Image 1 (cartoon, chains in turn brown, green):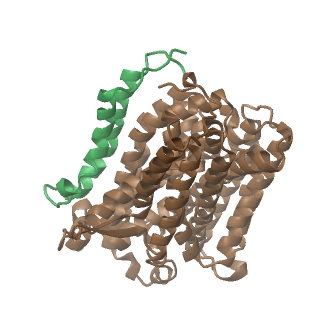
Image 2 (cartoon, each protein chain N blue to C red):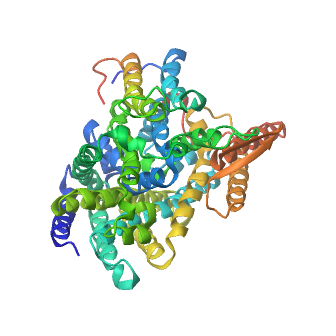
Image 3 (cartoon, each protein chain N blue to C red):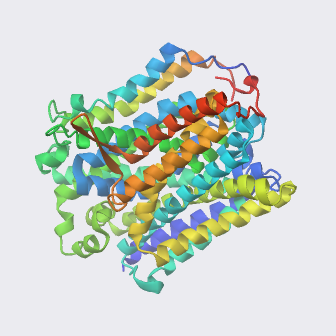
Amino acid sequence: MNVVATVVFVALFVGIAVLGFASAHWRKGDMNHLHEWGLGGRRFGTWITWFLIGGDLYTAYTFIAVPALVFGAGALGFFALPYTVLVYPMVFAILPRLWIVARKHNYITASDFVAGRYGSPALALAIAVTGIVATMPYIALQLVGIQVVIGGLGFSTQGLMGDLPLVIAFVILAAFTYTSGLRAPASIAVVKDLLVYITVIALIIVVPYKLGGLGSIFAAIPKKHLLLPPVKDGNLGLQSFYPTLAFGSALALMLYPHATTAVLSAKGPNTLRRNWVFLPAYSFMLGLIALLGYMAYASGIAKMPDLAPYFKQYGPQFAMPGLLLHYFPSWFVGVGFAAVAIGALVPAAIMSIAAANLFTRNIYKAYINPECSHAKETDMAKLVSLIVKFGALLFIVFLPLTYAIQLQLLGGILILQTLPAIVSGIYTRWFDAKALLLGWAVGLVWGIWAASLNGFKTSGYALHIAGMVIPAYIGLYALLLNFVVAIVATVAIRAMGASNDADATVAADYAG
Amino acid sequence: MSTPKKLGPLQIILLAIPCVAVLVIPYFNKLEPSVFGIPFFYWWQLVWVPLSGVFIAIVYKMVVPAGSGD
């Protein structure tokens, strides 16, 4: 066990927990209302929103998984970069419109918007359930980040005792989310980002310096890993998979409930627009984090006797922790590992709040207790946020890790199927609710089927068409199918005169 | 709060440029020209991160009138 690193790690973690509880009093509002607990009163300004969205999207799993992917798969792993370049121009164009209409009608979730826009509780239920199902494995994956660094500190992560540190971390997370709501991750995100920036900048300066510059790092990587393989025999291979994975993931990101929660908590649409200008700073860091995978490869740490056992247990996921352990003094290892662990708490808190908001608004209030008071609604959301986190914990403790990874992969495909209802609804009321529901169902079933073809291991599907083979992200193919079905069904339903034109919003609610 | 202007075709094109730049794989899937030993594939995509911020900033200036608040 690494005593110095552990002491620094625990001290930082305790400090964060205190901050989490204290933040309930920060810009205090009436915590009996769901928009106070679940959206921080929609009062976050430019800076806090920047930290919150950054803390939300660049998760602990990112720090572990992105270098791991580059370490293990080479150029393909770099897809995370175009993915984040694609996100911001798209959300800049789309999400301020959602914020404006959501504020006007006090919508807390994307499903609230769909329910109002289409007058269809069934469609809203489908969107809400998809969001909750897609979020659960995502929360579970955050725990993987914590698990890897706890292992790196020299604790066994095997068996029930091995899960104890994880359980403690999650009890703390659950408790401060329960009391402080969205204010907790918002305040913690500031500290988390500070730690992450310090760690990444140190790594990106020290490791290339020790290895003789970026040039010699790239020179040490086999040539065939550095680029996407060329097109062969009409099979586009990774050349089509790479951009579709980046594009599909970018679309999916904007639809995840935790993204909606962070976006709707901003003070106003211009606060958001300013954020999209500055958020690429995070993506630049993500690019540097990705290069850590190559640094780990070039340094040969996976073969060193003191680190080899870790790589054997955690695989490529140990690339980033391994670099820290090899090149830095113990106290800094503690800082870096704390950055990863705290980096897990922020998104896990926002995700559980987002899932709780969805359940409370679109399942509990819509179907079980429509007459519930504001206070009752908020109590329900707090309770559900506990249940969601407890479920994620059971998931990691009792099921093999590969399940969480595969379900997360499936989650991206599922959440993309909510795009036609949510995004087209922001612009037009042309689609019929029943047609959108049908498109959603078809996209979902086809997507799950296509993923099952390769045992849920990868997210690619190879389309054979006109003598060509076009492998692409399943989520995107499913989305195309979803749109086609929704359009055809809308035309058919119109022709039969069976369309429902209910709409709680009016044209003036949309701007920008 | 004055309302921001609608995104027109020019703004959509400006927002689309960084997106297209990181999707044209055949153009940037090569090692040379490298910069400081970083292959083209990597620095091209990295450079588009800050550049995308610049493009978004230009569109922001165009659609959000100065002093329009939150």
